[in-house]
Length: 350
Ligand code: TYM
Image (tube, rainbow, N blue to C red; front, side, top):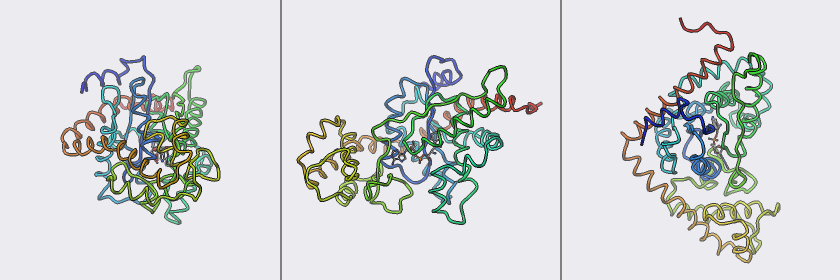
């Protein structure tokens, strides 16, 4: 990999491409929702952009976490990004906590973000209910840190699943507020990013309930397929997943959310068109469909799993990628942080 070439790109010598940034929390292992809603899309678009993809370990501690597995989860996720096809000649991958500018900008943004903007966040309300009285300030503040992640890199586009849309809107509002208050002579301080949400796969639903999103925090393992699940586990989960008693499988029937979700998974994982799958499955029952979905899932995940295990056996390489990533990311992030501090009127380091 041409690390030197990438460093020149991130130092703005490659101005022709727009910037993309996205990340995933390092909580537990990744599931099909993370893959189809995020990583797969990053891989597909990466050649057309200048990309920063990171591991949101600071976000992972906004709910109670296990200190013994945090570092391991981060490293495993790095192997998953690379195994899924992230290309280091156009993309930088890095660990959020390795770039202190994230926490520092988050503080600056905290001080200009009205509290009631955060209290409106749906994800906070949902997660806070689960935490009861132990809900942390960090969980409320989570979207401000996310705004800092994005704004530090002057990102033009942020490819995410549907559930992050509200956080993206907040990021835009925060950037707008900084620009209004502190921009000089019509010169904005921060670039206002745009969400990039692809229709298919933007909301992968739970295998146990087609009306709920597939999620890392669902207590039931059977509700999600993880990227590193073995073929036997995938087979068992699909066998047990919720279906309905109707014969003939169709998309878009509001009465059949599981049917829509499973057909969509099959369509994406087997690389087919919606129309093709609709015709193929219109007369099928679940007994016929489930083995097809199992096979498509196992086949789609196999190359990622093989590459993942290869990478996990090469710790030195992973370390070097993350070291280089932190240095590339810091060089961009520190420039933006200095720009914001200057606009806010801080005395520069003497
Ligand atoms: P996280 O870790 O919950 O999810 C990571 C990505 O996966 C997508 N996703 C889904 N897509 C489709 N169907 C699902 N069931 C599903 N579940 C998750 C999410 O939309 C996301 O794209 N706050 C973020 C992480 C983050 C971030 C950022 C993202 C921190 N800073 C800056 C973008 C830019 C989060 O918790 O995602």
